[in-house]
Amino acid sequence: NAGVMQNPRHLVRRRGQEARLRCSPMKGHSHVYWYRQLPEEGLKFMVYLQKENIIDESGMPKERFSAEFPKEGPSILRIQQVVRGDSAAYFCASSHQGKRDTGELFFGEGSRLTVL
Amino acid sequence: GQQLNQSPQSMFIQEGEDVSMNCTSSSIFNTWLWYKQDPGEGPVLLIALYKAGELTSNGRLTAQFGITRKDSFLNISASIPSDVGIYFCAGQHSGGSNYKLTFGKGTLLTVNP
Image 1 (cartoon, chains in turn green, orange):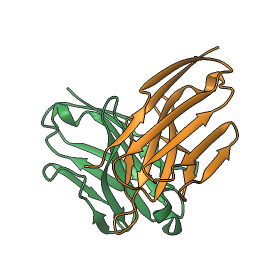
Image 2: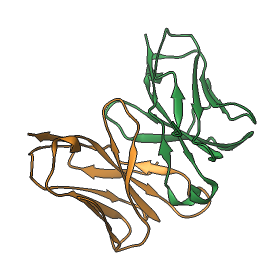
Image 3: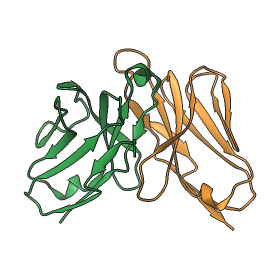
Image 4: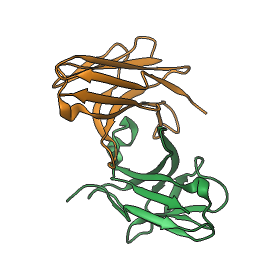
């Protein structure tokens, strides 16, 4: 399967715990984006990363949220001290260098976080 | 932040009927895209539009990029049960942060066999 791979697909956490969501982009893609989808809402941009660089994190809450895309391994979205309002589906997308400007993003199946 | 107004919110149709949905924006977009999301899955790109006035088809799907660059519509002809899902429009600006997509809230389509 050469698509965008996300795991876990479902994650349940209690308030105050940490959530780590992982994303492996499509083969050959060096641009990774994270979007959040609240119930009955469209997707909202969170962060854009290239290998070892955060390009734009303007859509990410300033506290408790962080993202990385290391030289080796998947991109990780980390949410510390989760609260109920963090319950959402988190989607990762990737694009090829040349397609970055066309909006043609390939999305993973998402990680659904539930905070109890 | 940017807002895309997508309508209708939901549609219930009979198999074989045609469907139309649209998005409007208060600002100009450089690119319009239409995605479909099945339950529990990620969005899948259906059609991408790059020029004002452009009309593009993909099988039974047809989408247009409005002349004003502030709107787009998607038509589905002769609907079938597997068309069920949520359809999202998304816009992309030109300029420095052109990698960001702004999504509408979606149109939930139900097709009765």
